Image (cartoon, rainbow, N blue to C red; front, side, top):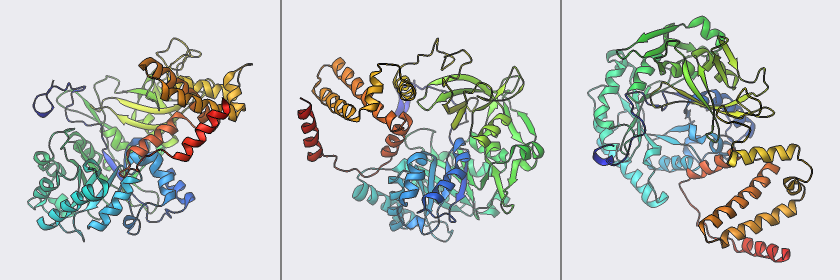
Length: 515
């Protein structure tokens, strides 16, 4: 049990210095994309997806995009589905741009980055105070709520003994993070770890409510971060921002080799050689940092075989099985968008489903809080959609095909839609939209009228069943519903939420006709 401000709260994990958050934030410039064109946004999402498997991406906005609300195609095509993986900016200094940045937050961007000063200058104390006042005014007058954890201040740092640490202390009550833009000459004279360690006293303890998240960027936007630096900074809870690339498997094998370096605790970190896995981007040869090498470089293992335990889950969080990963399998998975692991029995890559037909679409890959285990979130496919080698077993922990809850109901409805047995009531609902509509109205009314807790639960279960039948008929998955719930949770402005009289009248008329 912790002491101090959080006393009485039991910790669920004990970390050393290896957070599970982002390590490399690939800076993706989108100035060549027509954000108002659905096809252009679709192509942008396809290019971002391999990076978003591994963590957040930093969208580098053109000047016109950072001065207005995100266009509707960008909101619908990227922010609704992938907003929790996106940080957007930099928004230029000034209260007007902060209002535009708030619109990006409202439409789903998880974080926005706001310049503290113009022209790459270090902000003065007066500018910092004015910016803090602008944030407070935004909270009080426009949003009616605080969004500290979603605001990142972008601060230029020219020298180690400059005023930037005072700036960090001044912005801490108003911003949840700081993106420090380092002058290249500073990196030449000062080790990057020394710069990061200098922030320790200001940023506070990890995961405390007033903690300040730190990310480092190099001015000019063309710095390729050495993986060794990324891994060392990750242990200090510091991320880096810079051009990113996903190296081809063959190129990675030809140009890099695993260099295992043990520390005093016997852990093994996995870093790449060959200029620290900095890669040349295919288009134009610009220097960039390989995102997969960074992810692997931040992993550690005390296993003799140097494998990484990997829990595979579906999008509802249900654990399907335990497998093992290597640097090679992680790269292969990111490149093909499928669940790819390491087979200990065959001693080779194992792309799930190639022989069984139960393939997996990759959704995301996460580190645990100690950086010594991995979680794959996937969409399990197949007929049946089972992970385990035992026939009919969806998970390696299930004795049979049954895994209860909403996930099981969703899979049952999908099965009934494809091929329902004779006399199926669900099939009748699929074939009779009027009946389904009336049942949804009826069960909603019964839920409203229920009073006892168990009765409320039973009526809610009925309503969920009929609602999910409607969703299945329209090709909507539970994950799609969760996506919209998550997106709405990012909204900064709320509508009154009053009941619509015409909807109530229509429902009452429908219920009256049914009687």
